[in-house]
Length: 336
Image (cartoon, rainbow, N blue to C red; front, side, top):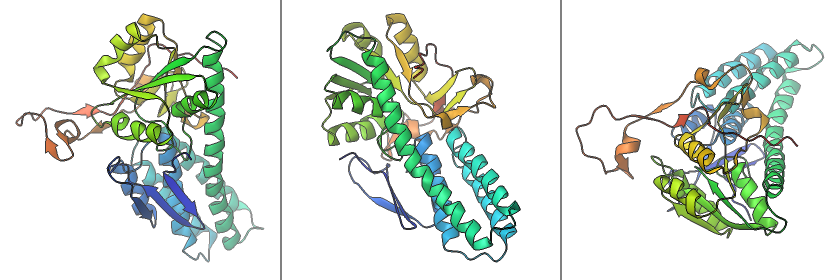
């Protein structure tokens, strides 16, 4: 059974604490928006689709416990808390897209005089809950389309070798995954020889999280150093690279985990097909190019320490990094 990072049932929400993986599997109860903001900001939950799902579900949990006599009071609370949730991780567009959609929906309910405050509240919560099921359905479609695109580029019956970066599976989505969903579909079709995945410094999402998922699902896989990618493409006959996305500009420029850009450049050099696996909610049509995507800067401790143990020489006050970098050098789109 595929891992479940988000548990939601009857107004109760729990998320798997990804900071503790792989040593400990512990679920954190989310009692409201403040809890949702904290787990997103601290990266206890991460991955653009999962951020949107957890953020919105945290709002559903909170307002389900409240009573609203007036519709406008509910609308104001929804708008304010959705805008607050966007601030937890600004690079990932899915949360903002979800917030814009839900704000538009709550306004339409507010303007409908035939709907009471109680019905408005119930409909709004149901709309958020539907997002969870849609994300799962979208992920499976992405996996199927991606697997088909890759298999169409190789010989009939040929086993494929996939390279991926960071974590894009059940731990980054509601379930199944985007890029890792493609890997899962290839494995289910008995066409996957091996999945190579990077450690993904500085936060090690590959070594900690992707490894955790692939081992759990018994998928043949190999962990490689970030700096091994060029040599791997030269010697291992990689069939394709598949990565996820946190935001895609209208011209196709894509923001993803730091390190993706150099993998794309190397893939171009070695003529390895490069695929971005992402839902439509990751496309931001309001942004023309990657130059306009705000890149998140993360604390220097994520580079200098591992599990609170310093690995870098002290004294360097100019140490910082971006978790995301825009503009892939080479993108192949599958139009299905």
